[in-house]
Image 1 (cartoon, rainbow over the protein chains, first blue to last red):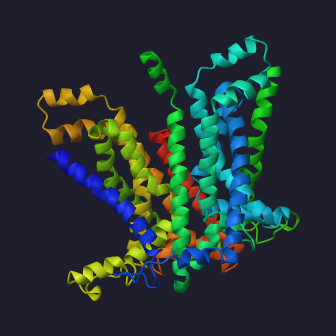
Image 2 (image 1 turned 90 degrees about the vertical axis):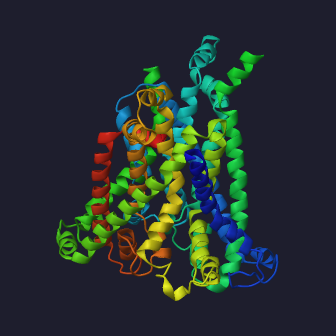
Image 3 (image 1 turned 120 degrees about the vertical axis):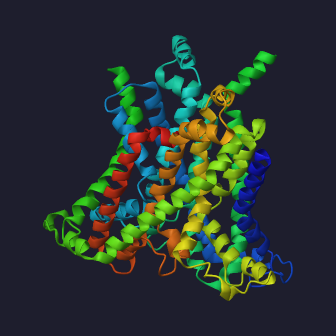
Length: 267
Length: 283
């Protein structure tokens, strides 16, 4: 009885979580600017119009460029720090960890304002570069967490063995540590990319006159006549997101050494 | 020497990045808030005028209080709604728990703006929800407006936070040793009593983590209220944003941000008395 009620509740919450998203995708095929049931008819014309909207294409390519560059930077910088933290002892490590996790809790409006002031004081004009710099700050903690968890999961003796066999420290990092952590690096990159691609609250303060996809979306959400186009775009983004999530899940499964060990035991 | 050299190479990029683009901006913001609007260090004069103006404007304080309240409601509701989900995953889901957890978390991967837009469409004035209610015989005029008020902001935020609130509660519940629950049953505790006296207290760290996990970002939220809140639903974050966009009163914006920052640090201080920050992130 209690069990049944719990399951009913669980599926109800799940349905509620998915309902708005599913509706949004359904409406993207609606042959009318009015978003109401019954729908007027099935159409793909909004999808066709996506490709003709030059502003949108520009925003999309900006988002991809910023996402790719900033995620690459965050992954490199964060991975180096993760190796430093999990394999070395150094002065003020605890303090570093606390500062590095602060971007997770500082409100983005405060971070945005602070970075905007910095760029004004130093005289750096607001461009996609300043947006990317902000995205790296936000993503470093996530990369640090993901990669450090992976490094804690495998035996440091493997690295020692490599060095005993004559590899120097940096060779060991490149040929042993990084390949073993590859799934985590990819996961960290994808997670950063998805954050950057979706970021609005901070980006808004750092962007200047360019647009990224979320900035474009936000500006379009105010015009009802533009809504069908936004919905088609939304459906495309949702689809791309789902692919990324599936990819990440797959990586996570690859990334479970325990499981592999079990399989070996069975063999 | 060599080992220290390696650590230096590994740590320099992140330390530089966080110093230059995170700590330095915070310091500049603080310094700027004590000036009177000069955008060059050389011209800067110390002044508390903006702080005084801030302190004298009761509307600011009211909005700060109201935003704190919105964050409290949002966090409470999220935790309440997420607890049974986490409970089911931890105790009833068996081997499917990983899959079901993923199922719950997937929507939160989807763009935040798009999810807000989706809710707006669902609850819109001619949207599917209103349609359904009207076909059931409830006229739109007989219930309070669904969008553009504080309730709409809270509902939207709760919707986006439920999966995140479930995670730390789930990991706290999962850590409870099953024999402990069996023991309380063997000793004659009724199921609800066992829950109140054993399960709930043991899951409390997860509940507190989940609460703050929602509360702190919600406190500084400005996008959701801008889209869903109308004029009555705006939050403190919107006030800050407004100083930089429309009012163009940067010093006041910096003071407001600084006040918010202090508030967040205060709440974090309270939180870290219960759990370590790093544990919160792992949850």
